[in-house]
Amino acid sequence: MTSAAPQGLPFLKGHGTENDFVIIPDPDGALDLTPVAVARLCDRRAGIGGDGVLRVVRSAKHPEAAAMAAEAEWFMDYRNSDGSIAEMCGNGVRVFAHYLLRAGLTGAGDVAVATRAGVRRVHIDKDGDITVDMGRAALPAGGVEVAVGERSWPARNVNMGNPHAVAFVDDLADAGKLLDAPAWAPAAAYPDGVNVEFVVDRGDRHVAMRVHERGSGETRSCGTGACAVMVAAARRDGRDPAVTGRPETYRVDLPGGTLVITERPDGTVEMTGPAVIVAEGVIDPAWLGDGG
Ligand SMILES: N[C@@H](CCC[C@H](N)C(=O)O)C(=O)O
Image (cartoon, rainbow, N blue to C red; front, side):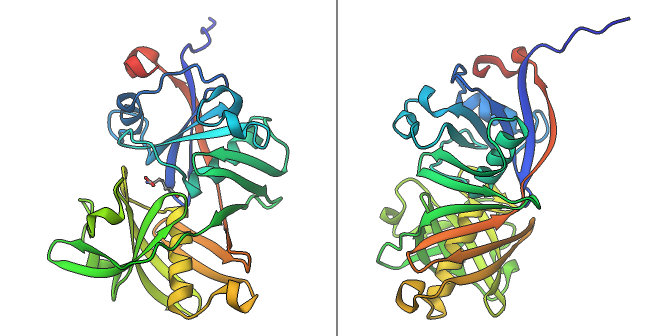
């Protein structure tokens, strides 16, 4: 007896320090991936489950990426699990590069990936770790504050292509269960919402964090968040590579693993961490509905 080849929409499932993604290869940009379809894919009970979706599209085939096509053949169309769009995803870009290598769409070594925050250069090590040039952190002036329930903390506004508020706390448990998005003030600091990081010290150039992500809730890791935390911690510690001419490296522990973040004297921030692909299969287009 022979079984017919499965029909449907190909997908893979992967994670970077347990920030997990549904990967949808769509080289020609043929899919109309609606917010409802993204939320359905990311549903952990009724769907595949994930903190977000990484759609793999040829830059030339996507209106938001066509201008980057000469520099980066592939565009990471990142979506949060609630279906919203984000500019950038640090763990996602490592998993995306890992997928390109596995699919034979790039060779080992260096690959450029187009994102809504611009082109990111990625290096895939022989040992499997992936290093990404995450660009420069922007540190908008003016204090911000974040709050969970009755508690509030001063925070540092850091933009890594996407918005972050970094709060240093006494204990990671102080942020509670983080079932809802933390409040922030002033409202105008983050007109499109914000990712909020809670940080404690673990040692010299060593911190640990939790994150509540815009559009995804509390996740086990956030790459852009870890970069924002590193820069906020370095400035708090009186370290600025642009002033000293020396790079600074911090270890950032997250619930799902560890990322190593370096800020260089030219201001660029480099993130190193793992990327894993755990499964591959096909989605029933009838189940996905109008997103497939
Ligand atoms: N988990 C990501 C960040 C994903 C986007 C974020 N939720 C946003 O809306 O900005 C990372 O690893 O950076």
